[in-house]
Image (tube, rainbow, N blue to C red):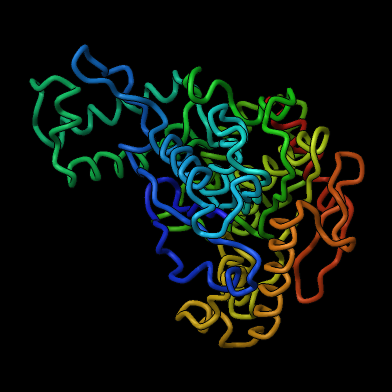
Length: 404
């Protein structure tokens, strides 16, 4: 099992959850691998336009690192007791986006046998035109910070102090959600070579790697994106920008799906569904035409998380999955109750993840997901299966974002 960490392609590392694979390894059934990859501007901005005869800048460096890590696993995992022909790739958030993107990356073909994507934003892969705009804006900001208008751009990118690179990237990250709502500048780019097309298009046309897929999101993905991580389209101006891009005749259907869109709770659900849930439903539906798919929604949240209005928000399932229930966060979150249910949910998730990793299938209690019945496992205090949960929202989004 190979895990890709999240963090918006700007932060995070393989040490985010120390000992994260122990609960899986103790089963005696898998070898666990995680790794680091290049982040931020030097991992996910496309500086290829600034290449010179003496210096070449490649695109998608973080994605290339992930392929290199998978290639290493393929070439070396037998020495650790693993099977290179039975690799399960899984990741959360940006790591989930990476897993989905790798399913559409030609050079990753044959390097994994199945995928688990937890809370991925599958649409966060952008055109070379938009990526070039972000690279230009970054360079402009870097020149402003360094007061350097003379050095060739290629040399500036290589010679700049790391603190200046970080400041320029942070400025770009903070501006983009308002300048171009619904986008995030640190993400893979369709470069026509390493990544020839948007992953959603690859799934739509059956060109993604045809491996079994488990994919899902949490109940209220968007509730955690506040303050410094306020990157989703949740403000009135950002939401209005999305409505302006959608067909006029579907605006009312979306407003009916999200009544009281002006409130913080509903707007955060709108933003979370835009970034995570609906694109994941789309990917699951398209891929189910060519390979087995299982879909889940993680609903369980300790009582305190409900009290403070976060509920089952983005990333909370990792504490259950990796059995990190004794961390300060987990103990605080369960201080008002719900600890036993949270631990139990993690045990059930690990059982599902391990079965899928070992066999490529799930228990009969978790049926396959298809675009006809949309059977979804709801992970809660007591798990259940629902057909097309929140179908009215899904139908509204299909009209609102027909070209996703």
